[in-house]
Image 1 (cartoon, rainbow, N blue to C red):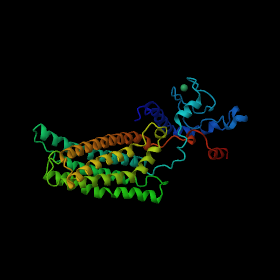
Image 2: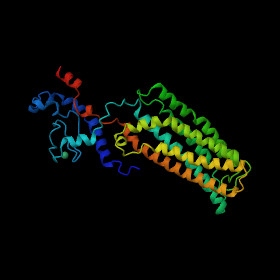
Image 3: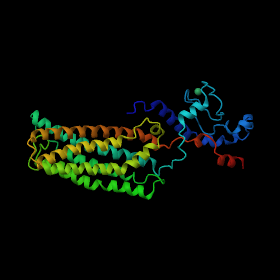
Image 4: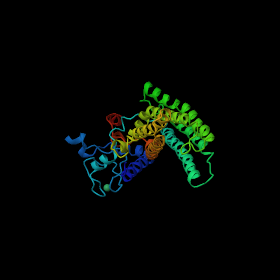
Length: 345
Ligand SMILES: [Zn+2]
């Protein structure tokens, strides 16, 4: 995982943004000052030795480099202006189409991941309470937990809706794929409801002391895994697409594979339930061993799944401020040819 998600560097980008936004007015005011071109602009290196037309703050000391040549050094600390540009500017920011509603998408992405996370945590609450009842003699039954989980899935569904078409570069097929993933929330909530509110209410120790409905419950759990995998598979391109908008992801500081890891862990947990179903259908003669193996595999898959979900939540929380503000593109700090011709006219 990305230990060195550049807190330092990100702070630079955000302060750069903030200052750029704040300085919008002064920037338009100062346009006139730029018209008398400095001498070095007319020599042969003109194309390279452009002036910085946007607000760019030195990566070393924060000094405002506005108006300096990119071949010069910071007048305060001497770090080359090029170092700041390489450190801060996202070369692809200008190519990314802007989000229709940056804040809504940023919130939606987080509702999606955190809602799903809460639904998973509620299952852990149920199972922990079960273990406590069996081994510590407690009587606590978290009757609200499955309801909270169901509500959290609803929140996750609402968040997922914002991911269907967050910007105009998403084509029809991509939007349809995501919409199918979002619609899978309906069967997921139905099955979640029947397992954790239905079966578990009838047989409150489904893991350690399964009743007669244990096979049906296992089949339904497999259905949950399959549906959840379908949702992740359908929504993943959009979620990764949003993550890739951030330069911190492209440079490898945020994990892109966390959703695939979550899919794999769902497979492990489902395998545990498949063992359980097979063990009850076919008399292998070592049912006790099988049921222990099944519980162990389910627990392993669930633990991996939960770790993966935590990582995804952390990623989406980190992406929140990045999505809310667009990336810093070259055209944000340099004059484009179009702007130049407009200025000369
Ligand atoms: Zn400096």
